Amino acid sequence: MPLSPSASTREILKNVKKFIPPLLESMHKGQQGRVAVVGGSEDYTGAPFFSANASALLGADLSHVICEPQAAAVIKTYSPNLMVHPYMRQSHHKDSITSNAKDVTDRVAGLLDRMHAIVVGPGLGRDGLMLESAGLIVEEAKRRGLPMVLDADGLQLVQKTPGIVRGYEQAVLTPNVVEFARLCKALDVDPEAGEKKEVCGKLATALGGVTIIQKGPQDYISNGQYTWVCDVPGGLKRSGGQGDTLTGSLATFLAWRKAYMDRLWDHDNSLSGSDLLQLAAFGAAALTRTCSRRAFEKKGRSMQALDLSVEVPAAFKELYGEGADPKL
Ligand SMILES: NC(=O)C1=CN([C@@H]2O[C@H](COP(=O)(O)OP(=O)(O)OC[C@H]3O[C@@H](n4cnc5c(N)ncnc54)[C@H](O)[C@@H]3O)[C@@H](O)[C@H]2O)[C@@H](O)CC1
Ligand SMILES: Nc1ncnc2c1ncn2[C@@H]1O[C@H](COP(=O)(O)OP(=O)(O)OP(=O)(O)O)[C@@H](O)[C@H]1O
Ligand SMILES: [Mg+2]
Image (cartoon, rainbow, N blue to C red):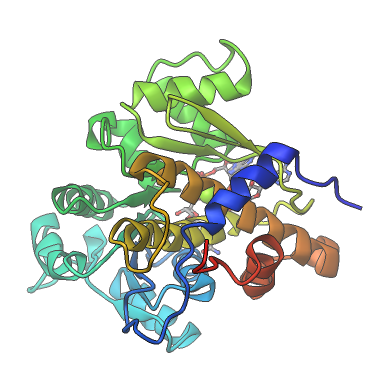
């Protein structure tokens, strides 16, 4: 029987519920969230799908994937619900329309105007043109004040050029244990200097107040000012692709944060923008761990990433009931 989450975790989850938008007759398409995942290459088509699919299953109205043409053709076959745009290019796939990072970014910019949050990294790969394009897309997203999730190869960008997100408080980084160590090295943060949760805070501070979800046996969530520990029970199988459910669900929580701040429904407005970033990170971490626990209970050793996607609706209900109660 999994350990139950600590009292503080239960307390935080109550606050997460406060910014889950109710579904109202008065709402129109897109108001529950418009999300784009930047990633998907000839090597990886699963990661961007898992991410975008999780954002839609959690409740975003519109989920997009911006990827390489070869990946686009494949991801389109996974689900007609996702809008898949073949605008990225790997170095050996340049063509007359798109031959450099600026061409890519010019095509992507129009999409960013319509988004509430983006995810950069799942399945991006290490190709130079893909990484350069992703870097310009991050700059365009910052110009638009978009909240963004940086994961997987997207964290390579931060490792190489920390300045790309330094001080941008709406950036949420989701490193696994290996990526966390790489970021500490790149930012000269000693991973041994203090308790794990303190190191996570130091890295967030070194990056100027971004939010970090350090994934592991427990997740540490910090913006440098305070650190929460997400001890919601997870699963024991460490199959690839689980982090993609985190990034997609996080993007939807970040879109819901914007809906809350825009007063899309009547609420007590008690949560600040920065509290909401921490709550979005915690909410997505708790959801992903619950999906993993539920999937592992059913599939054991055979559990794979797709088994988490299936659990998103039930995990949401287990943690948040039907979501925000408009009377709250
Ligand atoms: N089905 C898919 O399409 C998947 C695509 N993925 C993509 O694969 C690319 C490379 O990501 P990876 O994280 O696999 O490669 P990394 O280059 O980050 O990791 C390299 C090696 O580090 C070790 N490692 C990675 N994560 C670890 C963890 N959480 N704990 C302990 N050791 C760990 C493993 O030995 C791994 O092979 C990314 O673009 C990612 O999005 C992966 O996320 C897996 C699933
Ligand atoms: N030892 C653990 N026990 C329980 N849950 C864990 C453990 N390690 C990681 N997790 C959880 O598993 C999920 C994925 O974390 P992981 O470290 O595998 O990310 P990742 O390597 O980036 O995954 P991906 O293959 O998608 O890139 C997160 O929800 C995290 O909280
Ligand atoms: Mg990962």
